[in-house]
Amino acid sequence: MHSPERGQALSAAAALDVLVVVPVYNGGPLWREAARALARAQAFSRHRVRVEVVDSSSRDGSADVAREQGFPVATIASAGFDHGGTRNAAVLNQPADVYVFLTQDAVLDHPAALDTLLAAFQNPEVAVAYGRQLPHRDANPIAAHARAFNYGAQSRVVGLKDRARLGIKTVFVSNSFAAYRATVFNALGGFPERTILSEDMYLAARAVLEGCKVAYVSNACVRHSHNYSPLEEFRRYFDIGVFQADHGWIGEQFGAAEGEGLRFVKSEARRLLGQAPLWLPRACLHNGLKMLGYRLGRHYSRLPPSWRPRLSMQPGYWKAR
Image 1 (cartoon, one colour):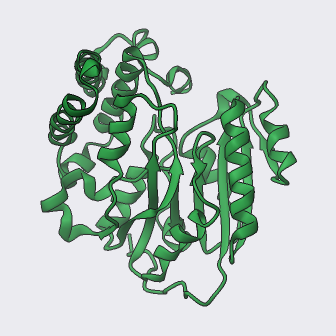
Image 2 (tube, rainbow, N blue to C red):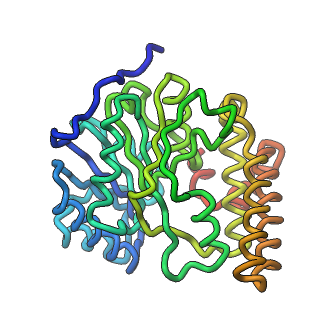
Image 3 (cartoon, rainbow, N blue to C red):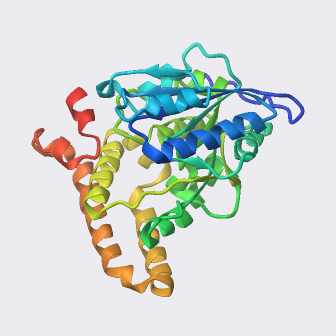
């Protein structure tokens, strides 16, 4: 494949055409808060920002919440949602300079957060940019540490030359709040279809291998975290293991995720010892189940097919597979 088009700076003086896509399913009160924050950011922005909400047939009025903020809503069957395919369909034939993706539970922390993220594309080498995730105000100590570990205070722009130093973190990105240069996104064919999760990392890895760069913009912030139960952690890491098994080339090119996991455990232990020691036993349980889930996911092909949806956070993925 020819290298994707890059090298055209999106000028600081020019207003950009921006398409923001938010998949929603039974978003609840947090989606109402997120929708209001997004509407404020849209009104604040100096760019031409359109918002498209894709509602997976919610039963709690989530589509009405979007319409109250003036957002158009496309409705799909809940069984038809696909992490990559649904997002690809939302941007198909939609002219834009930049595609932005948010999740229903990511609340922009300031009206300027969107424009701050978009400024990363003034660098013509940047194909992907993602913002900082701060914990929700009800985050427990385990969830708060996870945000701090993955989303630090230092911005950076990284590319292929950084993989020896950063490993798989070179292509870390999160579609909870991420943006993509449309020319590169389309040249690479968008996100992978029918992937269990991590469609964002997949596209970032493709872009970096083609010579593009990924920007982390630490002053573009959303509130986003999860107080997962130990069983939910197991299921999520089972899915991460499945993704790594299906896309082993990412580990081959950028290093295995296991090394980053060890660094996370050490960092978490230090933080909890100093700030919330009573949470250490719970953290040990979480980490043990994460490791077990990840390893089972890496070898999911050896498991009976009937087990796979029961172990996964995405049981619908296995029914459609």
